[in-house]
Image 1 (cartoon, rainbow, N blue to C red):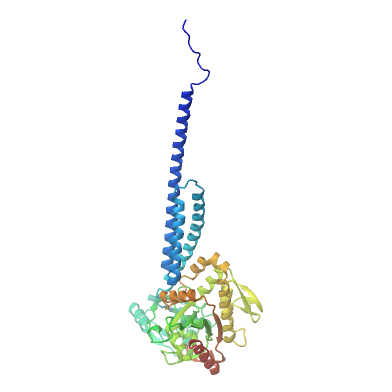
Image 2 (cartoon, rainbow, N blue to C red; image 1 turned 30 degrees about the vertical axis):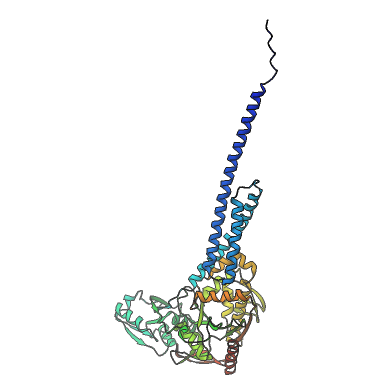
Length: 504
């Protein structure tokens, strides 16, 4: 019987080696596939990061507020940093720890860029809307007594309509629609009183005239009704910027007239100029002088050549107000900013209220204000800044209160917490509430100059003064109204202070 070697116990070692080899091959292959998938994910994330960076950089370019030297630095830093993070994120490394580190950096920076881009785009959109030219308009009303049977324009056919200083195109348009005869009154107050007293039945007034009648005649609004309204476009005189002056933003010294009109709604509506402030700016010395003029200041209207209250100049358009103040102070004003009641209310409410210091205890428009600091909402801030009857000095104190409100708003707006949490809301609240002839490129130049110098500014205040009296006005006719006779010494001092800032 031949000898057969005994089989070894257990598995064939060759098969075992082959199986271990195949297992290792599968594991290696799986690792490569997983690594390949991970590599693709990191590359996609790198691409997203680069796109976010590009969007952020383009938004900076669109805003156009960075000086060239700062923009150059930002550009170089952005390119280098984006390359480092992008390549570090997309490249295959022996260990994925470096990819993960770059991913964390990319996520943090992307969040910052997205947040900043939102702010930048909000600013860009706001500036773009703010610097669009606004056509000034005014409504005209056909007004009758509340108990009148007249309900629409056709009802007054064949009747007499009384008016005071109407725009001829408004008269012609109404005459084309209905057969009426227009009669001119000797004063606005007289035709208003005649309507209430049933001496006449129909009057035509502008919206500004209507508001003045509401102020002058008790119960005028409650005892009348408007049966027809039409819009009138204010004819624009020569732009105040068209004059040849050395006082321009380009030259670094200039005046800006700030007019706060006493109306709500669209900024295109003309109305009385309730707040009147000249901001004199010198970008070389970094000094700003705010000169306030009482609304009832008795001045000569530039285009009319007649005496009136400064506030009434606003009903003839912003250019009338600007040129009238130029005549008063013998200065050049190339720029203006026009705001209304809506601006104040919306801004203060968006800020969450403001802290305003009052020199007196007083009541106004249903609100009570304590001597000392008061926390005010939008409507309260407006009432605080408009009141004059509660003070012995009248308009002089109102000017101080307006400056207190402006300072409180500036303090709240410039607060870092406010800017971080409410910046876009502030811009939204201001949109459509400004009218200005300052160009966006000029604002860009101012900001770039400030960023180049990073200098602190000195802000000073001054107010013209006068004494209360009564007199007739161009806008109201022979009716005796409260006026403020200018204190000539304060006028001359204001001229000197303005010129000293401009000529330093």
